[in-house]
Length: 349
Image 1 (cartoon, one colour):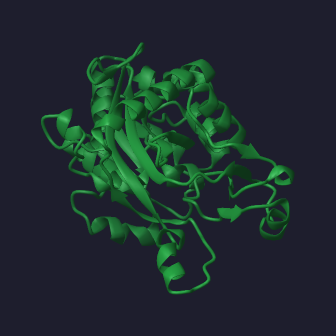
Image 2 (image 1 turned 90 degrees about the horizontal axis):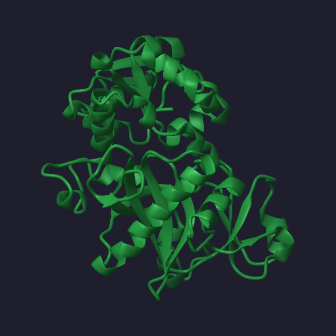
């Protein structure tokens, strides 16, 4: 992992009045570019040549400047640094650019890139969730499966390749990869609260080192499993799949907000104990049972696609801001405030 000091040295050469926000044209890029534009920050889109037309179709969501590439695995690091660029990692960024590049690039990134390493390792992620004080589904090895379990692969793949198994024999029959994680399948409503943690802010849900904001909540629409009840009624045999196809908005009972904020607080406090802190947007991926208990099965340590539902703000940001504010815009606000206060090193690594 590249040292923080090396990134700090790169930032010393930046013109703080000409900082630009850059990201790969995928996932939450429209929202990120739109939010930066609202804050008067110029943007750079790293874009595949045949995707430029897609982003040009949205005048207020496209970047101010494109850098066209043949592959997202090789970003033009030096060119971006010359342009005073700060990269915003999102799900596609993590998946396509890759763990090794994220850990070694000199390109400054918003947030703590160590959190992406912890997110990307199933063992580290489970340790993080347990250390956060969260209720988590029981973890199994193939030999100990004695109930319905969900088998997940590593990385930000949007649920692709996940499977349900109920026995060691079924596991052997269905699972062909050696890169997996087995969790007890918990029945309930999937709830994806989107948070933003700022070490600079003093408003919101106050904590030891800064402030936690609940930006919005979504549910995910997952390929065949989302509509499985219709197939059951029709008498159709279904092979369930969990690839995320889209998102829908959600507001929870107000009495449950306390539990959700406390979960976010636990994640942040644990991140400081384990790897130096999590800054910026993140999502605690939860299941709410019929007893209104929350189980956490993932932490996404960056902006998630469910925030795309709220480019002009959510029911929750309406109570925090005096104007429409998306997570993309909140990122731009944090970078702008950090630059003005000469504290970029606290929110960028």
